[in-house]
Image (tube, rainbow, N blue to C red; front, side, top):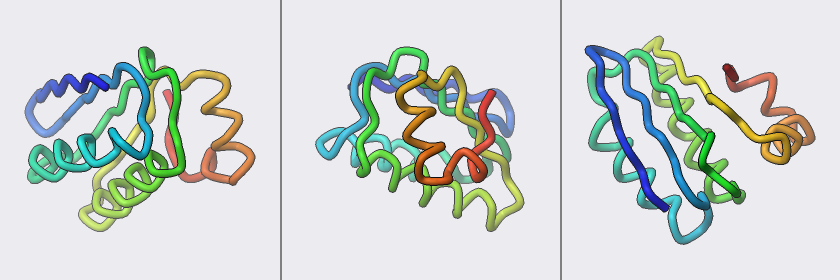
Length: 99
């Protein structure tokens, strides 16, 4: 997995390339832990992400909770149809903002 973080003031966009799975989810978690302080809006761009496992979804949920606690916002951008279907099946499409 390749992660590219772009900060613009209080906004952070992370572009994910490859697979977000059990092996790579900790890498995303560490990046977010480092970059999130002071961020009000987080955009996770999934345009180049081929696969998201339950470990990846756990990272998304924990990040969502952190941002919600500080009145921040998290958006999932360019979510593929397969991942969108998984989110819908478990009811997380109602939790995450998708653009």
